[in-house]
Structures are given as C-alpha cells and as structure tokens.
Length: 625
Image (cartoon, rainbow, N blue to C red; front, side):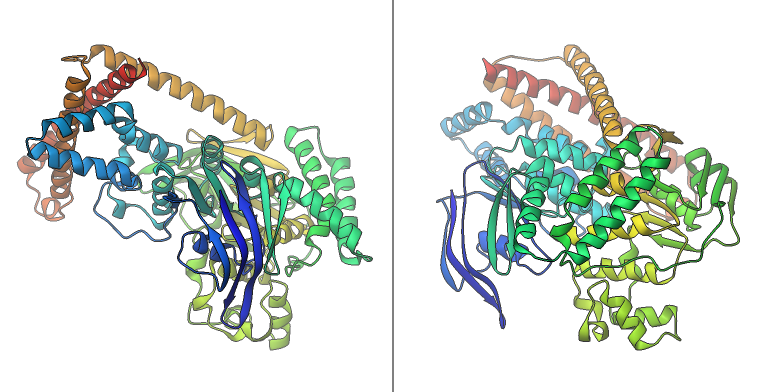
C-alpha cells in the first residue's frame, strides 16, 4: 500500500499540489489524468523519490520494487534482447553471481544457486524477453540487432519491454502507447491485465484506459479526485457533476446540437455496414460527454478550402509501392473522393505509412500511376512532423513563413484556438513539450486550408482534450481524410470506411475496428499454435543428455555460452560484410568465403537455440513436478 498524506509542492512561484491525499492499494490499476501541466509526470517523479514534497508525507513499503520506462536510450552496440534483459536487475545479479562461483570451488553455494534457479523462472527469462519483444512488434531476427540500429520510436519500445520484464511491485507508465501501433497496443492491454502489482498509467488514449484501469485519479487545480471505474465511466460521472454544478451550457449545447445534426445526417446516408453502426454509437457517446470538455482551451476548426463538387481528389492505379527494388504493396487501386473519411488498418511493417507517403508524393511509386485533381490542396501530418519545426523560432514565425502577408492579430487569433496565447506566440519552441510541438505542427496544416488531410498517427503527444477537439474539427470538416492511428476512439468517430493493408495488398475492410482486432487476434492464435507445434517437433528431435536438475542446468548454461559465442562471431562477421571496401574493390573469393561462413554460423546458432529451448522446457517440466 502507498499513501500520500497532505502532500504539497510548489514549482517556482506556482503551487502545483495542495494537500494531496490518496492511497494506492495492492494490485490496483489506476489511470492518472489531467490537463498538460497539471503535475502528472511530477507525481510520478515523487513516487520514484526524485522530487521531495515541500509538506506532507509519502509512505512507501520497505524494499518496494518500482519499475518505470526510461525516456532516453543511447545508441548502444549491445544486442536488443540483452538490453531488455537489463531491466531485470535480479536476473543480472544472479548471472554475475553464477559466473563468479564457476571460477571458484564453492560447490555448495553453486549447488544452492542452481537449485534456486530451477525453482524460479531464471532460465526462461531470455525466452520471456523474446516474447515481450515479439508482442511489442519486434521480429525474431530484430531481437539480435544492436540497440543503435533502431530508430528513436523503436528504442522507446525497447525501454517499455525493459520495464515490463522487471520483477516489480509498482509499474509506472507515462504515455506507453505513443510509439506503438494498434496491434501492439492491444497486446499491451492483455499483458497489463495479468500484471500482479500496482499499476499507475498516464495516457491520453481513452480506449486503452477503458481496457486497462479500474480507477481514475483526476488531477485538477492541485488536487486529486478518485473515480471508480474506467475512463468512460469517469466521463459519465464527471459530466453528471458538471451538469449539476453549472447553470449554463451554451458552448457545449452548440457542440451537442452540431453532433446531433451530424448523427442524423450520417444515419440517413449510412449503410448498415459494421463501421457505420460503430461510428453512430461512438458519436452518440461523444455527445453525452461534451460537458466534460466545455472549458477545454482547444476549440478549432479546419479553415474553409472552398466547396468541391463530388470528384476524386487523388488516386493510385495498379500501383507498386516500396523503396528501391523492394516492393511492399502491389496492384494498389485506391481512390479518394472529395468527402471520404478513410481509416487504414494493418500490422506494423505492412505498409500503411508507405501508402500515405506515396499518396503525399513523399516517395515515388515503383509502377502504375498516381493521379490527382488540379484542385487538390494537400495537408500531410507524418509521424516525424515535429522534425520540420525550427526549434529556435516561435509559433508566430512558423505561420508567417506560410503567409508573409498575414497580420499579427490574425495569426494570434488563430494560434489561440490551439492554446498558444499571450507572449507564448513570440517564444522559441525549443523548450515546448512534445504535446505543444504536436499542436503547433497540426496548426500549421490547418492554416493552409487543405481539402485532403493525410494523417499518420496525428494523436501522438496530444492530450485527451486536444484529441477531442481534433475529432470535433474532423466532424465539421467537409473534405477528405485518410488516417493511420492506434487511437481506436479516433478511428471509430472520424472514419466512415476502413481499408486493410495486409500481405502486400490494400483491400477495403467491411467490418468495424473491433471486427478487425478480433480477426487479428484469431490469426495470432493460429500462428502461435503453429510455432508451438514446430517447437515441440524440434524438441523431440533434440538430444538430451540427462534429466537430472543439475545436469539440465549445466546443459542450459553451456548452451547459453555457445549461443553468446556464436552471436559474437556472427556480429563480427557481419561487420566485415558491412565494410564498403569489400565492395569497392570487389574480392569475389573473400566475399564468397565470408558469406559461406555467415551461413554456417547462422545454422549453428539456430541449432543451439533450438537445443537451449528444449532444455529450458525440460527444466520447467521438472520444476512443475
């Protein structure tokens, strides 16, 4: 149990917390919500002992094991799976202890340590790390890559896996879904459902919160209010409270009238398709929750781009998409009408972002045709949109680059809709938060009055209120949208048609987002069954020298050493193969020798890993009896 008793904290001249009182009970799963700047991350820092309160007490159990996600990852040469295993400090400690004992002659201590290892999941830790990485989207061969070979988003996934593998009593997760795709988010929800300790999560993904948490802590005006239930239940309770407290609802009533009108029109023209019915339900739920967002600082709409007749704005015909000689999608036929609202589904790496980039003209198509209307005005928000911002410049400067003739007042009025007010519009964005930068990047697109929006994960770094404002803006937007998002609520409320990117093809998906996820889960189950069958087949073909606990432990340790040695040899060999000089002054004989050696080492490594898994299963079976 964790307790905050009358905890107060002042940051500079601003009182952040005023007499916080709350208790976290064993195995409780809590969602911590509140506006940006309310103090959510500071509260996490206090739980970790990084910040001490000015007043009050924080009572933590003795020897509390607390896990959280690192925010930075250096470009390490260490293998990704070994980096993940570093998250389990006890595993690493016992590994070092075993290495020391193997150098000496204290056979009694060595035997006791092995007995402990057999009774715990020590030998299955690498397999557990691999399973975590697989769930978060890493392919098997990627587990053996160095950390330095991954982009920033994928390194954040490694940090998340490192936090999940730790034996912890408390798990603190700050925006864990930001760098995940939809499938990885669903996997994480399933994993967290089995987590036995206290979980506290900061998230702006309402559906993730609905699936994971049982309690909401709402941080507002320096105080915390506890609500029983998930995020949707909090929203209902909060809306009811606000209705009772407030006499006038002019702003929320206008939004509700807009939504009701939209729902009526949508029902009239919508088919009985699953996604259409799913959207109607989501929109009705959205209308009920409007009072919660009445005082949101974000109220924007897409600027009128001029009415368009029903026409195709952009189309791909018999297109092949990819990079260089690598084709990712083939025979793509895709038309975007002027009022389409399209959501793209598909697992990580299937080609969703490649499709968006091809539509945006960011990458050339390899074959086929890309055609566009002469009236097309494109607004493209990429996953790396924040990188185009000039950190040394201000929000006002960024808008001026797009429209030099715009008046300062006009720009300030516009930026105010995105909560950039007062002197903030003149400040360098260097110290802006990720959410503030994302809002500015979105504002730059809105300013340009596009008639087709291409959105690739637009909600990363946006809080719930800004996401709500984005949904309402898209509802009022009369032109076309194509989006990729791991935010299921956004997909449900802002898209009419779903397409699936799958096995090198693009096809319309007739079901809803939930139907897609159900199909994906069934496919994962089928693949896991095939993998288990293959593992059992390898196990039956693998020799086992002995079935005693001590001998099995020795076999596992010996195979671990063999695998490590083979991995090191393979890494060294691949460095040689990566040497540019080898190809500039082509030495065919040397190249063939290195390639043959690489093939041999990979085969040996595969055999050693299969034998190692077989021994681990024998150890687990023995421990079970």
